[in-house]
Image (cartoon, rainbow, N blue to C red; front, side, top):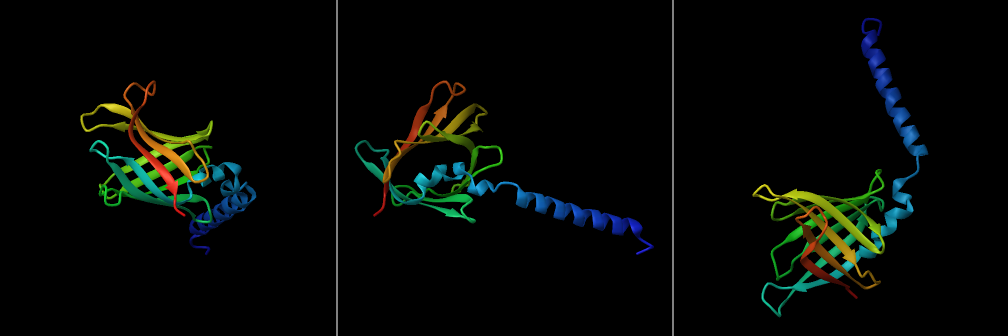
Length: 178
C-alpha cells in the first residue's frame, strides 16, 4: 500500500462516498410511499377499450393492462389495438423527484415518446413537445378524465398554437373488465 497511496486514497474516498449517499438516501422520505404516487391508481387494472374507427359508424376495440411494478413505484401499461389496429405499446410512469409525473412510451412502430405532467382538478394530464417530420413544432398531450371506478375517458390531443387550443386526435373510452 505504501507504494500506491493515491490509489488507496481514491478507493477509500469512493467507498466513503457510496456509503454516505446510501445512508442519507435511507433517511430521506421514500417517494414511492408519497400520497401523490397513488394518483394513477384509478388506471391500474384490466381494461376493454373502444374508440371511433376510421369508417363512420364503426367502433375500434382494444385492450389495456395496467399494473404497478418495482415495489409499487412504477405504473406499467401494456396496450393492444386488438384486431382493430396493429399498434402495440408499453409505457412506464412514475412520480418523480421534481414533483411531476413522467411517462415513457415505446411501441411496435418504433415510437419513443416522453411526457411530463400532473393530476389536477380530477384529470391526469401528461404532455410533451414534438417536432413533425416537416420541422413544425407542436404540443401533444394525453388526458384522463371522467374518471369513475369502472370507466374513464382518455384522449390524445394536439396543439399547434402553444397550448391555447387543443384538438382531440384519438378519444378512447375505458371500461374495466369484470
